[in-house]
Image 1 (cartoon, rainbow, N blue to C red):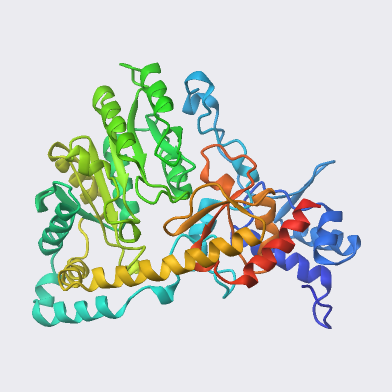
Image 2 (cartoon, rainbow, N blue to C red):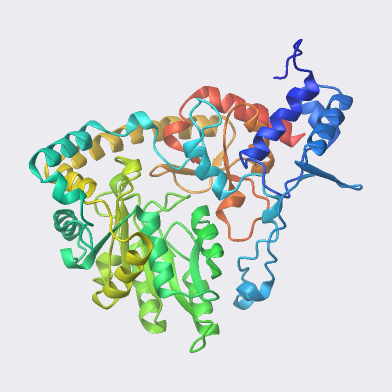
Length: 483
C-alpha cells in the first residue's frame, strides 16, 4: 500500500518500488510494465501519479517507452535464439526456443536469488527449499566438532583433499546406495559441490555446444537455463504421472538415429519430480532404459529429493546397475544446504572423464565437511532427522492442499513430496507480479517449460503455503488478474 508522506510523494514511492524490482531482477530485461490504467487501479493512485513514476524510471534509464506499446524494462539485448540453434523436433513437438523469455517477469535466476535475498519475511510459496527452521543444524555441527577433535585439522587443511572426494564419505554413501538397490562401490562415487555441480560436470563431460539433450517438461527451471547457457539443443519430453512420454523420446531418437543430432543425454528427476511430485513407475523405467540401450544415450538421474521420498520408490540406477545411468544425489534439501555437498555414482568407463572435469572446475571438495557429513550419517542422525521432516511435511502438505482447494485451485498432479503443481485458472506470470506487492514470490508455470508461454499453473512449496493468510492474498490477487 502506498501512503502519502511529507518526504516521499506517491509517484516517488511507486517509482522506487519498480526500480527495486528491476535491480533485484524480479523484473527481467524486456518485461513490460503494467499499463498506466492498470497500474493506477492496482496501487490505488491516479493515472497522473503513474505517469510521473514512469517518467522517473525513464530518467534513471531503467525503462524505455515504446510507441503505442507501453513501458519496458531496459537491458542488454537477449541473444538471438533462432530455431536452428535448437533444431525442430520431430512430428511438431516444440523445442526450447526461448523467444518469449525476454518478457518473463520471473526467471529461474529470480527464484535462486529469492533463496538468498527474500523479498519479505513471509514464508515464500515459490521457493524450492524447506524453511530454515526445518533444517537440522545441531547434528551436523556436532559431527564437525567431533571430526575436528579427532582428525589432524592441519594435515587436512594444508593440502587438497582426495580427487574423488573424502574416502569415509564415499564408503558411507556406497553403503547407503547399496541399501537402495544401487550397485555402487566407493570407487564409483565422486563428490561434488552440491547436486547442481554434479549435473554440470556430467553436461560438460558428455556434451558439446549444439548437442541434443532430452529434459522432462514441466521440469526444473534452472536445468533449462543451465543447459541453454551451455549452448545445448533442448528436447522437451512431456512428463506424466507414470514418467516421461516414451513415444516422444522414441521419436527424438529415431528421427536422428545415427546422426550428430541424435540425443546424447536424458536428464530425469524420477523420484518426487520437480514440479509435479510424481514418481516413475517400474514399467516406464524399464522402457526408458531400453531406449537408452538401443539408441546409446546416457541418463542423468537427479535424486535430490531422495530423503523426502517413499522407501521403495523406483529409480533408474537401481534397475540399470549403473550401465547407462549416472546417479546424482545431494543433501541441500534436508541438511546443511550451505555446505554444498553432493555426489554422483557413475559407470566405470565414465569415472576418469568425469573426474577430469571436476578437477578442472573445482580441483577437489572440502574434506572436513565431507568427513563430518559421513559421521552424521554413520551415527544415524541424518536418518532420524529425515524421518521427522517427512512426518512434518506430510502434515503441511495436507493443510496446504486443503487451503489451495478451498481457494478454488485444482491440483494438476497428485500432491506428493515438497511441491504441488496447482492450476489457478489465471495467468500465473501476471499473478506473480501482483503478489510481489504483498511480499510473496511465486513460481509461475511458464518457468517450468523449455518454451516460455502463458500458463495457469504454478508450483507451490507445501511447507511454506500452509497458512491461510497467504491464500487470502492469493485469492485477492487472482481476482485482480481475472478482471
